[in-house]
Image 1 (cartoon, helix red, strand yellow):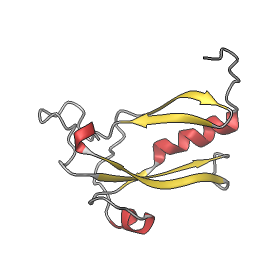
Image 2: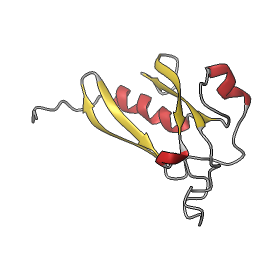
Image 3: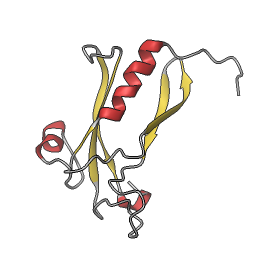
Image 4: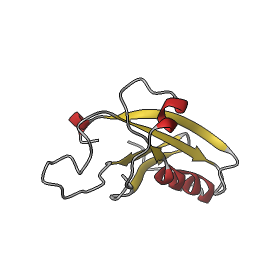
Length: 113
């Protein structure tokens, strides 16, 4: 493992912070961006925040756990026992005028959303 790590730029960090503002929608697997936009959660699912790490010149790892109620006794963080589409965007600027990545991924209950 290389110890020569470059610091992430402010631009990259601002863009990554936008991932925390990703829109989350309900439904079942195989999501398109339009389908994910159709149904929304009534509560903020990012109560635990979004974290990033392992930056490199070409990427970074982002992770979160969707949980409208992190201490819910059901062990699912208040989330429905079904797959949840998560639309995310990463941009080079704080205003999101230069989006460099956008996609819809699925958070599954088997992995704790």
